[in-house]
Length: 193
Image 1 (spheres, rainbow, N blue to C red):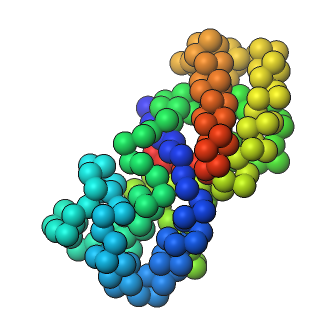
Image 2 (tube, one colour):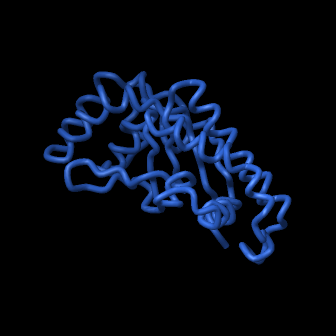
């Protein structure tokens, strides 16, 4: 069985201006992340429960690793409880977009791009975490929406064994709506599994 795709509106401006520098500093010294979180704990959520951190936040995390610190820091840029992902339909939509052949890298629209800080790939759950920068969202949205009519011309029966064509089209529309929402709010997207 495939993993469930999660997607969140992501504040890439806050990420680049505030969180990314902290993440860069903590690659060399993870204590920098702990210190920053201690000083600003109310700006973060538990990536596991969605609750806003309190002054006893460290009690939830046993010996946090660099990836756990990354996971916490990223919550300053998105709402953990606002998952708008494609669930188990992501793979079929990814195949559909590849069939459309409208992107240089067909997976970016569904999966985003790897996030590398220093020489470390950010992947707290070790199941995949990727971003689409806010500056890329309008272009991807336009390509997806402009090719919506082409979706009906593709042999959808060949894309996935377990997916009905109508479900695939509905999930494609969900992805278009996700990009529309992100563009309307001038946000990027964070994708995870």
